[in-house]
Image 1 (cartoon, rainbow, N blue to C red):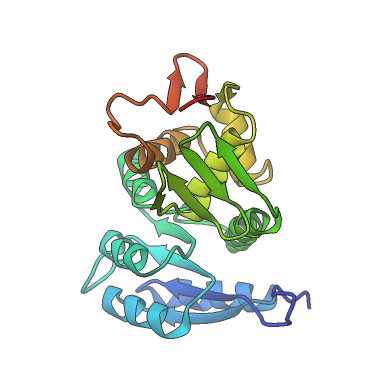
Image 2: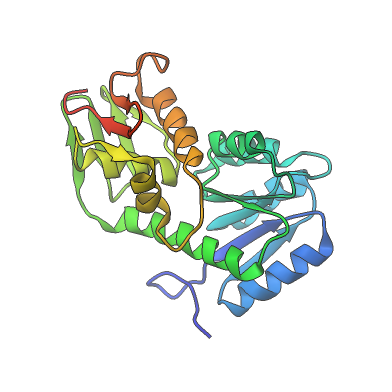
Length: 238
């Protein structure tokens, strides 16, 4: 069995949050078979408590939960830490996906899903977070934006801002080539990888989040600019 862990031998922990016991059982079986440790919760309040107790490496989070829904759980998790989150939901409306992504979710899987696809998404999100940690450098754009890659820390105008792993990776990708215009497809490839299905509106949601954190006026962005009909670029002297 291939064990997914850190260099020190510790195993990655996945918190599965869903109120359907059969879904929890299936996901636990597939994830444990893939080498992950799994902890579970069946309602929102238990999910927050389990996350604080076990400090999981990633959370699979159903949107529709008793006691505290998935969006409220995501808000609580984001207040505590920048743990990667993959949303699970039977809701198919695009607005639900966008709301989840705007709360900082790293990916979204619609029910019914293939358990193998979910395992692949977990691996992809963790690889993305790992890749962000591995590049040992500091990237600066102009005099205002600095990204400390080993620490995954971002500062703007000398003040630290909190980005999720996906937001950091997306901003870092553009910061390495400031002034270059990236299509949404190129940015999806950079943060998700070609093996993971996603959709281009996800990039718009992440960009909206980043602008809220790095722009003086998110409604009139000067740093993370839209190139209409093409995609986005990070200004060379933001």
